[in-house]
Length: 244
Image (cartoon, rainbow, N blue to C red; front, side):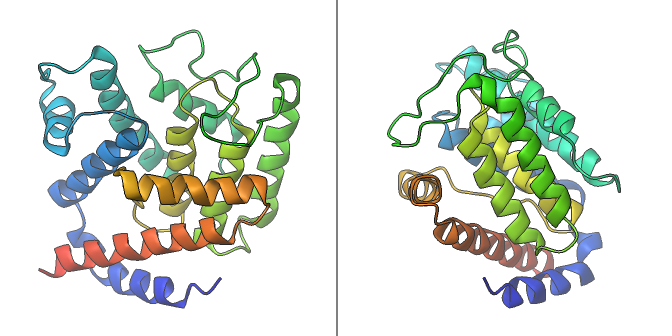
């Protein structure tokens, strides 16, 4: 993968970083929460997500879980932003805490815990590992992270960890959101902004197809290409916003 354009865009953004604060940054965070939940079937609009997260109001005709998903994801975004300030490497415990925040008030028995039952992924040929293998798989994933976190390009590392966590599928629910938050935690730690994968039908299909290719055909190139495109688009969008 060639990350030259991404490196150039990031260097450009670094000059304007002080402008990407406050309301501008918050608007991107809300958009990320909306799109990540939309991928999973949440029907709140972007405006409704903002009202729920920022004003604490309820939206008529929407379920309690949809409200909680928005609030929880916003809390998880705040959490990864705090974690990103630390110089310490990401740990397995951090991933469990992200997941605990995602399912807070929705599924307290499984929040922050690995699944104890086998799972199938709807529409996928991939069969995630059996429960008794999860601890070993997670340890191997974290070993990969620690061996590569200082040498691999941050966008490639973020893509790899995202795809690996989806492959392991260690939770009964919330795997996708947790994987995207892990990816963005890695990006944030390396000075990149949060990358927003879109939740509309066309982009969701591209996302799932690339993940399926990585899981079944063991070819992660389409997924890494997709994430690189998303990071590029996000960097360009932020630069256009801050430069006016």
